[in-house]
Image 1 (cartoon, each protein chain N blue to C red):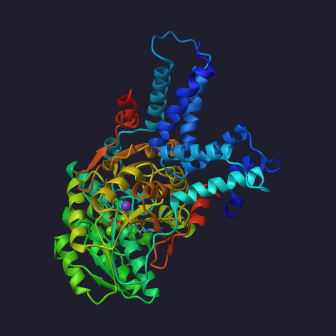
Image 2: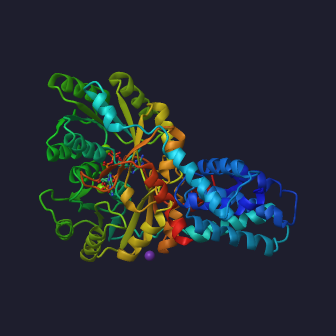
Image 3: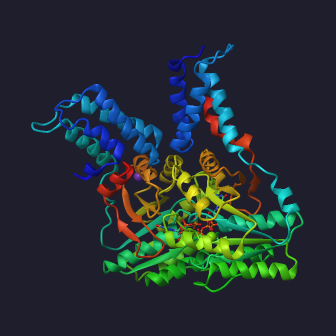
Length: 291
Length: 284
Ligand SMILES: Nc1nc2c(ncn2[C@@H]2O[C@H](COP(=O)(O)OP(=O)(O)OP(=O)(O)O)[C@@H](O)[C@H]2O)c(=O)[nH]1
Ligand SMILES: Nc1nc2c(ncn2[C@@H]2O[C@H](COP(=O)(O)OP(=O)(O)OP(=O)(O)O)[C@@H](O)[C@H]2O)c(=O)[nH]1
Ligand SMILES: [K+]
Ligand SMILES: [Mg+2]
Ligand SMILES: [Mg+2]
């Protein structure tokens, strides 16, 4: 099982159970504490950690281990089931024509991710185009254009147009031949009302099949409010976690998934267009628990 | 006399509150251990609840961590030999380039001239981004082609400043994660070639537990003199400020509070502590 190679303190407390067939309340208490620590250090929302750990505790004490299962394996499988239950499978991304809108905080990695996703779709034999609607950040047009040329995908942007909604509309027309439309947006956060209104307008013109929230793996407890606001404004269908090549654990994504009732779509792990992969729950859960 | 069991519950609550504010776990625990040691066994004359005593102790402890090494930035700038060379470091996308633009305005308002040096010869669009800022602010920019040597760009900017009596060199660097050995080595090289007067580490107020790790590793690669915490407008509590000052022992100098050129404030430790403890008080 994936959790076999857990972080050392968690493994230590689980190892104490290895010969036992039943777990005592103290055993469970200790293990749950370790799991809490790991999740909190991974930036998972504090109240979500408490909810998760109380269900783990309750189940570990109440459920009879299936015949032949050791206490250790029983607790492990409960931890795993609870986390998988929350994080779910990768967001469904059908290999067919679609429009995807990217949203998120300043500097989270949207522009880089739009080129990465376009590259990913092109490797699947589809024809993607990226539309850059960020008229605010200096150099945003050039950045997106250059990333798209590295990814060898179509690009639309207009450095002389200051209206993101208009760029989005024209961009969709101009790239009508493409199978996949990826719409990049300027960075914004939950408290910027004007910018939240703006992305709602872009969303209504673009009418995307999927809205993805792009989150830096290092985001802290703020992930909850940000995810909630973006979900309320445009509806979030999936999360992209970026900068996983660092040491941050990406627990904010778990919070966001819980908050938006969505799932994780892609993972970013570098600055080049190839540094992208589809989400895979096992690796992510291992990372959260500090392996 | 305060007994161990009197403080356990309030300490646990405060630990959770610190984690909710994004203070890193080991930093939070270290602070709370200190408080536990100070309080347990102490005889207190007080009418307040033990919880309040613990919270007061935390306030003091937060303030002492976050005030570490505070110095008068304006005075240091005033007294420094010119050109004063400042290098900005930090992970990807935290706001280094924007902070440089803001500080160029800040210095201009205080009567100093500055030149920007684009040591980010790596990221797509980096030259165009800083060029637009330089044009908007009417500040001179030294930039080389993409792929060039960052240390050479900043070196050129220092030469330019020397030759043209410019007061301050603002050296940008590419965003890099602390896990990238090659890029971290490059920072050391910039340090060697340019020998900056000040190195400022930039991180964001929305950062979580990882802030400790990166602050530590950037400080090791190119010793920092202080930090800037950006995106303080994004409604996070900003516990990263605690983590960073604790692990580096260097002060937070400025807060970034928006995307405009004037959205930068001198860091105020007391206000930060109020911000960190803010919700606590509302709940009570
Ligand atoms: N190491 C690493 N860097 C990344 C990754 N994704 C993005 N970046 C870097 O993070 C920084 C910000 O990325 P952008 O794509 O510009 O982020 P953005 O969300 O478009 O930023 P704004 O448009 O300003 O809101 C850049 O330096 C990128 O190269 C990743 O997965 N790993
Ligand atoms: N809300 C808010 N946004 C900010 C602040 N500072 C910077 N930003 C935004 O954050 C994004 C990234 O800023 P940059 O200055 O490009 O960050 P950087 O560290 O130079 O990024 P790289 O060079 O790619 O590593 C941009 O969209 C900025 O406008 C701030 O204080 N508040
Ligand atoms: K949703
Ligand atoms: Mg962008
Ligand atoms: Mg930059």
